[in-house]
Length: 116
Image 1 (cartoon, rainbow, N blue to C red):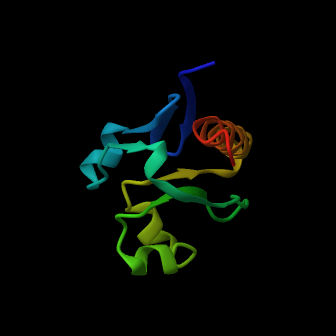
Image 2: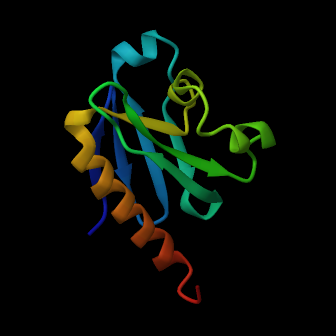
């Protein structure tokens, strides 16, 4: 079952039983994007917006250490989401990968807290 890999816009997300690894493409790194490793136990809430034909969608992994303003405006301008290392963008053509990632992410989070 693990690891599972999903392709996003200029990034690849690998879901492990205990963490999510986001690896950026070289072109994204040149633009200032960074790779990230986020422990699933630190994820407070995965915030997601589906892509449209005009705008990319995203999955943002909000964690407790995030500053409060990041959690509040997670649905605000996409440039702020897109530049965050805990977010991965998905194009219209990658919308199925986004749904599959969210489904697998929720299953992995549930497996970590069987009492919930």
